[in-house]
Length: 458
Image (cartoon, rainbow, N blue to C red; front, side, top):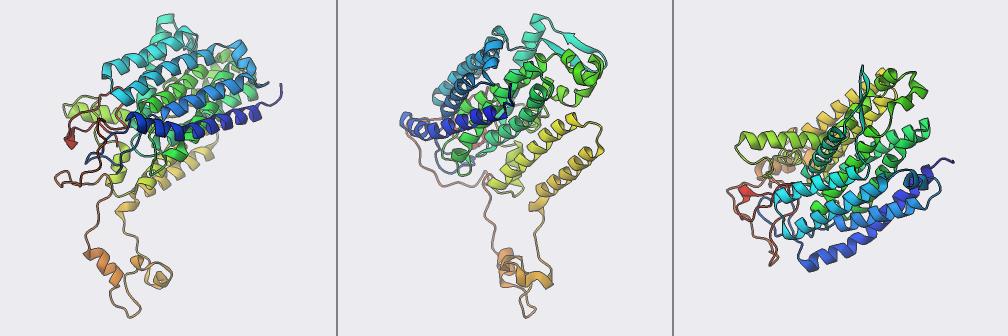
């Protein structure tokens, strides 16, 4: 068998191309059926934007699986494993529930039940956790009920963690794409580098997931022309969870004796990345942290854990002064640092330089987070080389007029910084459409016009 990296790249490109080409017609369809919510005072976006982008992403998923099934190096995944069929079944179910929610706003319990049923469908068809590698012990086999419950919990947690960060243009798709790229490097190393065939399905899933996100991002970057909606966010969350479940619960650590000496040593060797995959918290650490903080914050205030608010991490970046695009890029940076840092550490866990690089990049990330707190001013000797707004003094040694006006004029609020007591100019309302994009995956959207009761993550 030849090196299959080109087959993966072909699958990724086909998935991305189909998703990209379908997004335009899907946008027109969403506008025609009224899947375009009205703007409220606390929303980040300024114009009514259609949803249902998950329809195009599901089309890309199907195209990627069809192409992979006819490629020489990837057809064995479909012949020897039922996991691709299990993924497609669960994805179709969760996608259908998301489409109905984007249009009709179904009840929160129905969405939660649909997520659990989708996970159960994958379990029935063989995509489940069979054992766990425990450090110091080795492989621990799970009973059928234990594996089912753990699989369902992983799927529900991952879906809602991804959905919680779907609050800014391009944020969820970009972060999942970064996580998928790191995931792909790990699973491809297991399969082709160490000839572990059980890692092949997860490698295929992550390649397709990257294609889905890359194909949708050009339409979803700020200012977004279409939102993925729950149909898209729940779909990519499920695919990401399926890859984590496949490589964690299906790859036998006994096979790793080929390069680690014994089962216990193999478990220790793969510990830096096995633990993240058990509960994919480092691969999607930012969404998971946002999920936990949101639940704690809302419970502390006596609210429902699924009643969305404007306290998410990306909203806080807007509040401290970051622009929309810079807030998204900062979230990308931290996602890439955590995901690729975990994968790099799993490859060379004894290398001190990896830890030092991660620490150095973390310091850079903290500086980027605090940038709006500081007003950049060039030194006097360099003022002739910078724009007037960065100059303190003019050529005659007097106060610069640009600096004076910048201090004198009131600053316009950033998007997401509007005073809740200040009325906002009403936006165009789409007749017959209620709700907003970006509500939590299992949380209902409020039908009230009160901005403080908003369910939108946007």
